Image 1 (cartoon, rainbow, N blue to C red):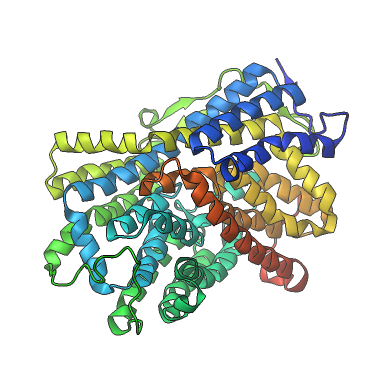
Image 2 (cartoon, rainbow, N blue to C red):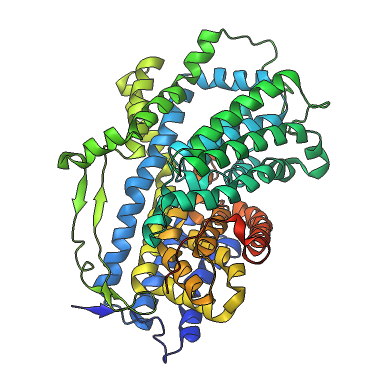
Length: 553
């Protein structure tokens, strides 16, 4: 059976088709923001609605629609869900062992001020987690750590979502940027230089913006020196690494530099007044508590182990070894009822071309496996028995079960949107409606892609080629539009159901996804407005700031 994508399936009208197939997006917004559905319920209903529209509007074979959804759901769970599960497991082990109390004390001893603690954990440490793991782990771990420090659940989730933006295109180990390079054929080093400029600029803004979200503008001004130290040290390092070394290391290197610079700075500077939450019963939980360097080192050892293991996992030698050995991955070379069935059509491709479908999970080199191994090593170091570890793992799974359902359904939706042609219909409609104003909408398309899939990587896969082709048709530098897709997509992380589900699971607010969505929607739109202004400047005022690449028409 062969089925050709038709991007103007309704009466030959691209715009009419786009309007109808956008219904699932509007439904998902309505379900979360208005109806206040639980994330996993909204995700599953939206996926079901998308399947119905794909079959009725595009005449996609039902077997292919179900198969595409299943492929996305499996991909969502392995490797992405595996990363989230193991990240939270590692954190829960530190709690079970009692070592997290020492971690809290060590952070509080640096500063009792909640704003400084948020800069340390939600911005700098979260950026490190994005660099090594990504895909939910940074928000999950950082938010859980803030909860452990005594932050109220809702503020903890929101500020972590806001703070986790500058490192996203470069985490884990540069995957989103490399995906854009793979889809478009633009060299990864070129893409890294372009998005590196954007993210260095955002790094200057986000630490202060995060504190404003947390305490308001007036109180945020009191810690602007610390916010500048965190942001400038991160931005400068990220820009240098992305410019000269490519996309793999900017987030990891910059986050470590930012964390060290901030720790050193606050040794010599503290805000004039200490800000705490009204819920705080004790202004300084570290008062009277002293721990030796050895105790602090042991408490932080799970994360130090994670750094070492992830460093090994990222080496070319290790990756090449696993790639050459078939024992280290699970693969379905030809995904049933989908591979060889769907064909892309013009103008996405010059002539009809098969849209291949396969599944491969290289479980040995997967970041989640590295985190799981780090957890096992940490159990030995922390003195946790295998039986206790198994109980913690089971507890972690129960904690995340609904978040994993939401994750699977949203990724399934993203895959179906791609294979049915929905993503291309929406993108082409944007191009037709916007014309030379397309640079305004390039980041918007990226944001929509991330909202649909929960992943900047997936958004690059969905719309990267479309951004490149449209740039060629309109005479723009394709690096501008493709990097704008990544740039805007980052702001979509704040409202993506996947990210919100992870944040809710980490802070114990499962079922209250809509409360977080309502707050982060406002911040996402503010940041998107900043992104649009930057992209317009790059397009029409300072186009020479970005590297160039050949356009595709």
